[in-house]
Length: 460
Image 1 (cartoon, rainbow, N blue to C red):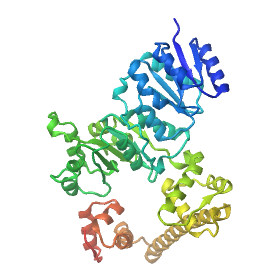
Image 2: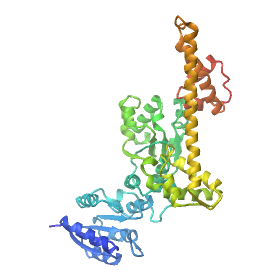
Image 3: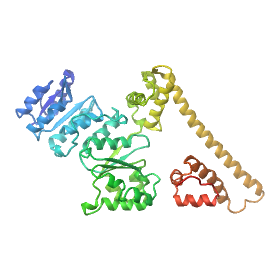
Image 4: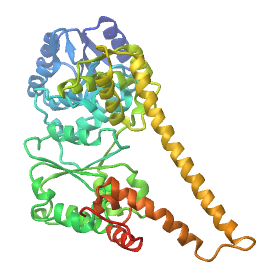
């Protein structure tokens, strides 16, 4: 006997298309365009599955779902929406929907979702327990592109659990925002959200600031601990963290949900032996890949307008942006991702003489970015030319023979001096930060400073 689908869609054309597609797949379909009929059918015990749009006229299906779940707790509900945002996905999960499909969707994806729902799945109570009241949407999570819809889908499924989450993606893609959204929509939302960057941290520093009696693990009890750049975790600290997560006694394990982020692919680092295999498996329970902006260019318009709203709240002039300017933004690859886009919009808002940002302002800002990239390349070319001249001088001075032994060390010392001096200057003498920038151990940096007779300055 075929399953009966209760279809609720107020768009007559779409309702007809979906009804025909479902019937072609062998389902018995009963369709309506309003909430009242749908809730009556559910109350009367009809149907094996509900497929409903979020908004039916002035009514929202999320308001009716709690009653449906109380009346028919085992009735799976799949919701559809053109309002494809993280708040919608989270609200669907919080209301007890089995699955959420952003419009437009592929019919094959719809049929697969219905089959999963009819086959049964995890108890809805284990899904996200987000409040009915929609929480303020975090700006970098705006986006209707397919890559962001996949992000929302995974977030909705894990928010109400305590599963460890690994968020991977390039710098500036919004990894911390995703971690915060998962926390805010989860069952630990009333607890603290504690974030810590691991980039450049030494084992002793981590022992004190992360694992110590007053460390981040203790501060995050009852809430969420977000460890940023876990791929930078020193080997000793990897062992320490793996031991904590593997502790057999629950009292020895942290009472905090763990979410980590990485700019590099942890699976690759693990295969290369640069990351502990057991720790990788404990962190990679649920993985979310944050797409770079170049893979979601269709989101740039919504993001640009949102960033301009934020700029106004922070005291910059009120500005809007026209469609031609957004099309111009779509031609840029944005290696700096969301951070680069936001900074560009802030400059445009500050410098635009009119209330509407046009192609002219955007072209100017993109041109400035391209000039900076070109200047960086020019500096690199100049450096390589100077290095080539220095090598030529070494060989010319020794002609017709060869340079004296130790050429490698002599050239390396000439490179190291300016490089370390610049890093110290940029970090105002902070050796910890300078070591992180250079990618070397702090003790190694201190020895090189002494050997090269550099002025260390500052703290560290």
